[in-house]
Structures are given as structure tokens and as C-alpha cells.
Length: 286
Image 1 (cartoon, rainbow, N blue to C red):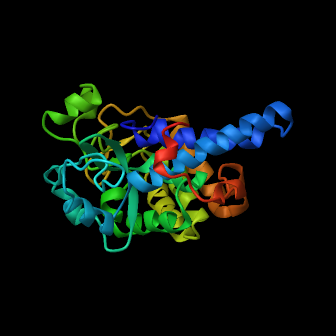
Image 2 (cartoon, one colour):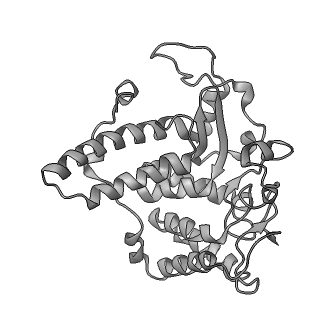
């Protein structure tokens, strides 16, 4: 069940875990049975994510024109999303070329925010199709100032403001707008971004992000996260000398220097998953 669950924890990390399990299992009697069940689950999960979590300019325009309260398997607006619930920022944020997996899909509600970790893992795990992977990188390049700015890279965009951040992020005072998990910039995300860029044949994106990080991280003593719309300020409660900030940079640097390292953390397309995808009606029983 991924309906109404966040993209990163319940869907994309789950997809990656299933893909890794396929490589760990032996194709003996017991292992083969598990592998067959995993393949069925991967088909259903990839169909759901690619169909309902994906957003680009065409899909955005379709949602903008949705009819509501449709019923039966022929319904186009399957989650009964009210077009008036579209946030104002999304119309200017969406480029002509590019797209991404949104944060959440549930009945009558979609979380349109962009999440770095989920979209990068979608590329590394092959949950995103080759076309979708290219579109994600197109969006990052088109919205560089918003998503990367002066410190790679935003954990999510945009930040929640006013009272909404208290409701959704658990009222943690670190999560005020453009801080911590609410639009903060996290150096550890650098390796996810770099890996996704290298896998899609866009190493220049990784190089550009690394140059930004190298100009500040050592001087700032390797903080945990940065604040502000551009990631200009060291986080108000950020710890320094953070192992994962250092490791994120080192992994990104090593992959850029030797792209063959990408194979350690990224998966390739599985031939078993190239078969025709399950229809939505079949996925309910898996």
C-alpha cells in the first residue's frame, strides 16, 4: 500500500529495497518463489508511481482541467483532486522541459513539493523511466537557484510557511521556513545529486554542484545543514564536523573522478521489469 504515503520512505526506498533483494536472493526453489512475488510487486509499484506521482507540464495542465467526482475504472481524476487545490507556486516552478515525482498522493490531496532524495533514488533505482530521469535533471538545471542555490542541495522545495509547517513537520522549532527539514539545504544530499547526474550522462551538473560545495564546506567546518532560500546561512542549530556532510562530499568527488564507482550504489534496468506493466485494476490484489 503506497496510497497516501510519502514518496521517499514508503515508495522509493521500498522500491530500491525490493530491487536489492532481487540481487541477493538465490534462484533456488525458495528463492525463486520470492523473486516472482517481488517482480509482481515491483510491476505494481512502478506502475503506480510512474502514473500517479509523476508531474510535468502536460500532467499539470491535465490536473488543472480535472473534473471532480468521477467514478468507475474510466475515471481520469482517480483521486478526486480538486483543481483549486493546486498551489500558486507550481505554475511558475514547472519548466517547459522537465518533471519530477511529487511528494505524496492521497484521496483529494496531492503534495506537489519537490523532494531531492526521492527523485534521485528514483533515478538510481530505475523506478524512473529513462525519459523521466532526463526530465528530473532538466528540472534541476532549469530551477538551479531554487533547488541548489549557494549550497547543494534543498531537501525539499518550497518550504511550508505560517501555521502549516507546525502541522505537517511536527512543530519542531528547527523546521521554520527554509530551515532543517523544511526547505533546508543539506550537503549530504550532494552525493545523491551527483550520482543521479552521472547516471543520466550529465556530469556537468555534479561538477557544478561540487564547485559550490568546495567553496564553503571546509571553511564553514562541515555543517549539518544550511538555512535560507538559497542555502546562504549555516543552519541555526546545525552541528559542525558532521561525518555525513564530509562523506557526502567525498562520495560525490570520488564518483566524479571515477564514474565506474557509480555501479556500487546505482542499479541498472532489470529485464524482468521490462515486460508490460500491470494494469491498475490488477495491482490492487498484490
